[in-house]
Length: 225
Image 1 (cartoon, rainbow, N blue to C red):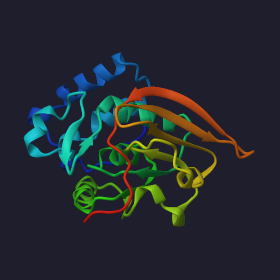
Image 2 (cartoon, rainbow, N blue to C red):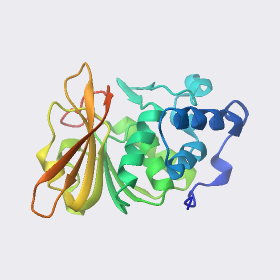
Image 3 (cartoon, rainbow, N blue to C red):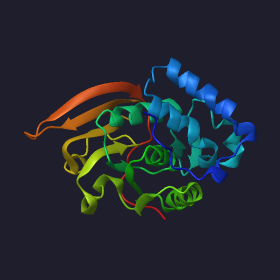
Image 4 (cartoon, rainbow, N blue to C red):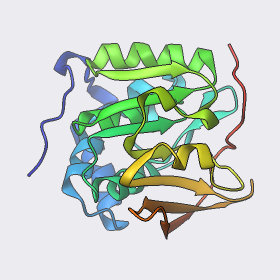
């Protein structure tokens, strides 16, 4: 069943970002192996052009990463779809995102009906993302903090999604997973990483699955205004 996407309709622009353009992106994603119709419908509906600078609006529905300032990017739609698809397999209700960035990944998760908590270390990016959440009528809880710390006060989470790469998994984030919960994160050196899905078992062990080869910006510590 396709979920009801929770977006304010007046916030969804058309023109160069018409539904036809979005449909073409969805078909490319389907051809590239994304099969969950809930995810494809979210990608079709969430207005990605609102999450990029106006100068890049005409490229918003290309399957490519785009710069958002401060050395950060909005992830390639295929990567957003693949990470979301991996999380949905376990039907999470409460999700923590590390690295809000433009806010696009959090918006896709929220549009699918999840309770989203997101942490961003760069204050300017977070302020812009919050404006977009309000514009779209999305109820996303956000915090300006070091993402490597997570959000322990709100743990445990059914799922955690990390949108920046670390050389190794961050134990403090795994500790905030509920039993049976999953963490999806890029892990590896700066030249390229492995997108991993980890599932926390009742006996305390962690099951690890490789999803794809990816390239993400690094997961850094500390905060910036």
